[in-house]
Image 1: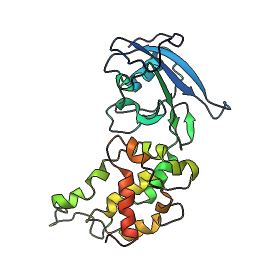
Image 2 (image 1 turned 90 degrees about the vertical axis):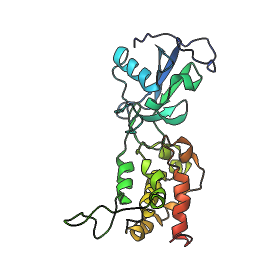
Image 3 (image 1 turned 135 degrees about the vertical axis):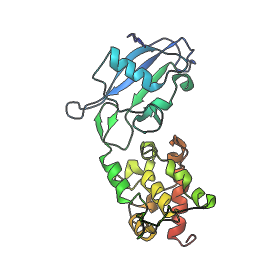
Length: 256
């Protein structure tokens, strides 16, 4: 897909993009090692009805500015690598079509609540550290399959208790949208809390007591104000806000 530079179009930003139109892509550029503040660079890129935001970013990177830093991998909304803010809303760039944005100007920025590595790429070090802290795996004494044993069978009802929360792809969009994370950098965050519920609700797991002790903290589950922003931006329908509320049920004794 060829790309050309141009000044901003005179058309209204609310103009719907036609299949043969072009968009103005505004990319946030910032290197914390050399820059004092982020700036925006603009490129005009032709699009088709199936063109995604990631497509136009990579077109710019290939034809116009190879220095653009962006993280991506599968391009199928499975790996969670290309999370960013698109027109102010956290989303996956590979899962967001230009035609669905209904705008001739597309602004991409790094996700909120994450340290910026460069441009659109953010640092996931603390994110994954917190995720691991919640012990995201089945805990039980007989967890290894040995001779004369078989897999741990579950009924459909038992699987339904946690299945929705197992769809998390660790994209970080929920943490980016969370208003509590914007004010408390030590907050566990909706992603880790939802994953804690995923394992607590799994009847094969015996680590509930340990996980509940970790989240029952001043920067833990009680810091969630139930804004629901995390669930609104989740590309997989995990609904972290609901998971957090269900998790609270264990802590206050409503659930066993």
